[in-house]
Length: 184
Image 1 (spheres, rainbow, N blue to C red):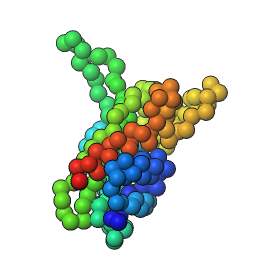
Image 2 (image 1 turned 90 degrees about the vertical axis):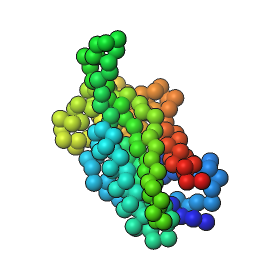
Image 3 (image 1 turned 120 degrees about the vertical axis):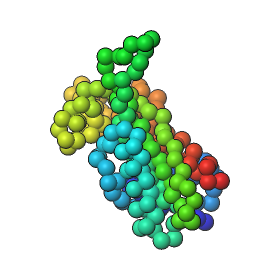
Image 4 (image 1 turned 90 degrees about the horizontal axis):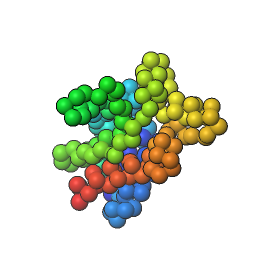
């Protein structure tokens, strides 16, 4: 059985990686290790988010000598201003998504995938940035919901924002499965 070093101990990301491996039917074992991303707590843009994923994948591979692959999963905020019918929307859109990177000890090219994104409330993202990301947008979404008497897991506001239809680990599983499929 081959080992994949996963550069995080996040319960959502570990569960997603284990589910993706089971779904792939590959003889792989996930070994989760705590790593640093080298980017802010909630990176902004694809470049910064992908950098965090690659940093985690490389650090994980270095931490687990028997691993053949290092897997990094980094969530971040994509910011854009949509153009609609030759006009630019007045509001920025903030979408949370993850970049998954898988590096190989054998030196194969890095495999990448992204999760499906979920739009985050502008207010939560901008408040997080205003406080220097002392709290993530997810934490602030959870606090706002709690004030209304709704319990929300700050590490999975996706579930709350989609009315219970989309869980974070499901989004991550699909992206991890995609990079595993690239290696088959």
